Image (cartoon, rainbow, N blue to C red; front, side, top):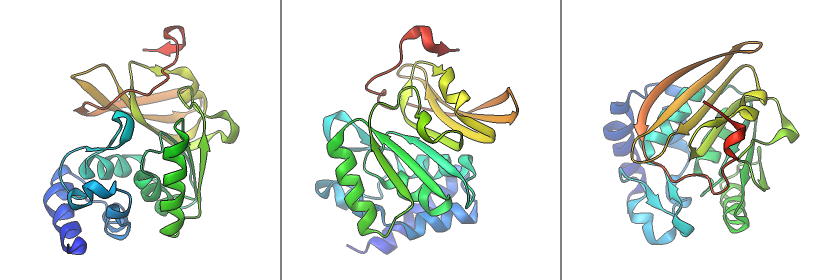
Length: 217
């Protein structure tokens, strides 16, 4: 298959039409080879406009959602990024190309190992993968300039805000199906957070959501 042609078509017909126009994001999507992160059985659908299945009921986001979230994170070359849910490693690779360092947390060891191999094969060396439960964030390398939570949560635990640096951006998918909202939270000043709802979607939940008492609505 001519993956390069399919990739260009994906960018023009899916990603640009979803208000993703940042040239840095478009260049990153054009550079990182999505087909290498897709399960072999679905490689011919690597650029299709739907969520691709991974094992254990997990998914890869649609290409347009990946690109839109990448644009909303507004990553810079020295940013320290936290990703909750490594999955296939593709979004990790996108973020690593724009940021200084990505710490990606995955509670399924097999996912983390496979993603590690894909990332190294594609020359990504500024992503550190950790196996563990990131449902309350990952304090070890906080604060982070950007946080991306790839599974949905009923509400956002306050620990994530505590781990977000001043000036930082956080993307979370909040709510329960079928209508979930993707929210961008900015830590604009010390102790002051601003949020905006971006779009609706439906994404599988994190496997180990925090206890309700830890939620902040």
